[in-house]
Image (tube, rainbow, N blue to C red; front, side):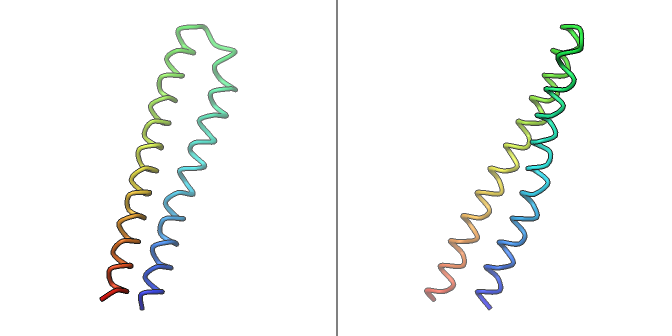
Length: 81
């Protein structure tokens, strides 16, 4: 049962991280494709929006890492009992 729980946590974290990776790659692609052809003010505005998206992706990724650590600790404690 614990091994099933460990696999479920791993699957969940993979499913959470996968769209974060896609979003991160997409913001990078948008940044390089949109900003060079725009006026400075427009480019700065869009860059700030893309920065905000990147910050939030990083935030959720850190939360996923914390969740993974907590799940590992809980599973380890369950195995030891």
